[in-house]
Image (cartoon, rainbow, N blue to C red; front, side, top):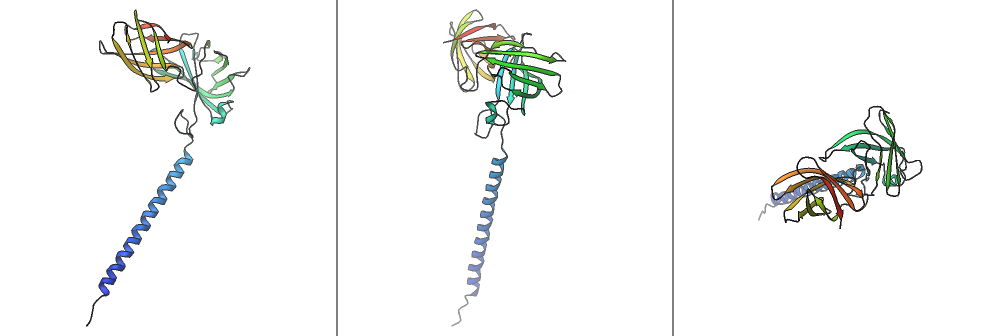
Length: 255
């Protein structure tokens, strides 16, 4: 008896070949994905604060200028090691934060030196029109403007708080606020909430510029939203400014 088996054998062979081809394609895709992942990891030098270990944190400084403006300075060192002693290739950006919490860049360039050394940190703008020095002695920050052709920067002496570690705002604060007594709690996730002595509550969010907080607060009684700032007068005292409503200005104290 003649038994025809060749077609069945051919089908099995073709199935095996197809499975092998699909397997090789899958292995190739996995290998390619792995290479892309390694390449992205190698290229990520990072310039922002926080996050993964490959990111370079920023050093930040604040001072209230002699012109009454809040200044916020960001240094971007080339590596974590450079944070201990600022190197020649460190760059900076200088901003003015208004009482609504909006920031405007007024200068950028390079920085050299160390703010805690006697010679201080010297900052020179890219166009060479602004040169200023920053020194830190204990809890005091002193900024001296040596050259300012366009009148963009004001120096000053102010309270310095190191904000490179734990958020200094976190915790409970209280004090007189717009002729009422309030308590407010800042959390680690950039929010805050509180109430006044009449039981009316409020809540909001914070964007931190060093040791200055730009806040958006919602009054849950009138359902109105206001913008303002909180900044440190000393380690246990915050000054607030709200120019767009009846909140005015004043101080609250750490509890």
